[in-house]
Length: 107
Image: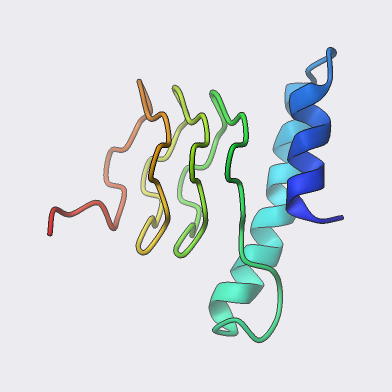
């Protein structure tokens, strides 16, 4: 299932099941890991643009090159996550835990 459909479905759902969301995240992160490791030849680039990821656990995840354009990452756990080359324009990171996250250096 394409990533955008996964997140549209649970973002619009009235019954929010955090465990289901975390399992969906695990699945799309596995596909993204393949994409990163194969340099784009396999897997799928993580596209979470506009997704509601409030309080999501993304700690230690390799999110390099992922698209978080206008995503809501309020209070998300991004501890030790790799955010190199990730698109974060317009993303809401209010209260997000970015301790030891990689790729946030000022240019």
